[in-house]
Length: 118
Length: 109
Image (cartoon, rainbow over all chains, first blue to last red; front, side, top):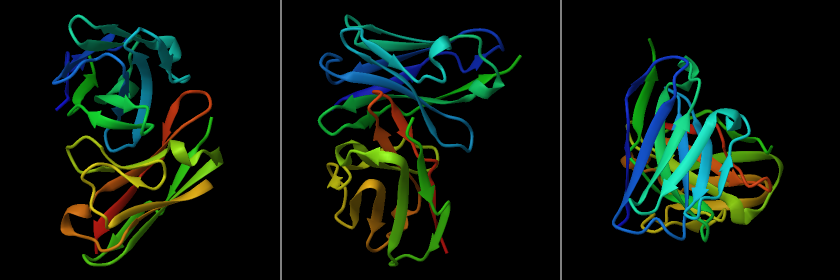
């Protein structure tokens, strides 16, 4: 079955760029939309943005100026870059598959905690 | 942007009791685009309900969803010990973006 795994640094300095990668295993990245979602400690879920395997993207308007999501179909991976981070960006970051038939996120990675601190 | 407001914030119930969780949208939401998730501590959310009332694969039939327009409900008919968790509603909007409610925690009374 399809599994997702986030990877990347767990600590990022303020004003720097957070970079994470999600590896899709057990299935192809093609023909699906893929999202990044985050959850600040003790808080709710915030959608960051999505990418289609073809490269089309859509971002949360509140983060749009700082977010870039890209895809590498040859590696079955998609990535997140969030620039100019502050402590407010400290969160567990999840990657997830959008199932457009269900119109919901049906597969999630386990999540990775990213702390923004000097 | 559509805002989803969940109530109550916390629901304290005993195993075997019925849980009723509310999700209210600031504007009409297509029923096709309303989903519910369960999240346990230290875990990723798990899809429970899609299309407002359709159970995802492997979800027990004690979970049910209903509603339309701006008011949606997740019901758990008889709470099992593993059902104590946080539940989120989510919608996919006309602006092609996703939003979540703030969550309802179902805790053991």
